[in-house]
Picture 1 (tube, rainbow, N blue to C red):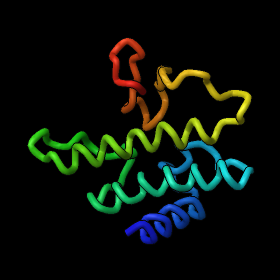
Picture 2 (picture 1 turned 180 degrees about the vertical axis):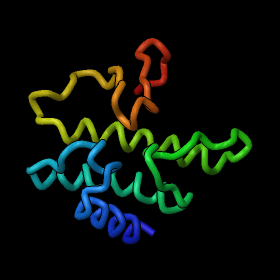
Picture 3 (picture 1 turned 30 degrees about the vertical axis):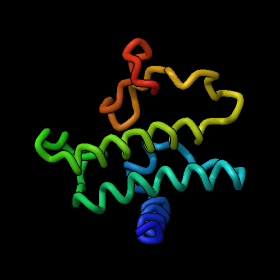
Picture 4 (picture 1 turned 60 degrees about the vertical axis):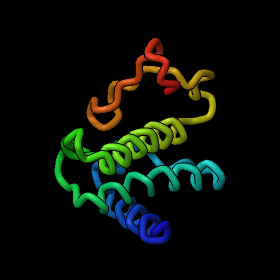
Length: 119
């Protein structure tokens, strides 16, 4: 499963798919690039598993009754957040993990530092 996700991520990167571009540029350092690719692979696995395509990066919000997809979507959202953070130069990295993301996944992920969500 992990190899498939990695393969899907690498193919999407090579094609410059819009969802990959929304996660920032691949970092130049080997260690950061590997971490970034791992997060991109998580998003790729989610998209593949739920057959999601189109303009909205992670597709529509799943029905609350679909606990499996909802949990996997949350993981993909978190992975997207981390990929975006990893893609930024180290000097631009925030000290705290609690910052407000307005552009990741076209506004689908919003982190409220006061929510206690730890994002």
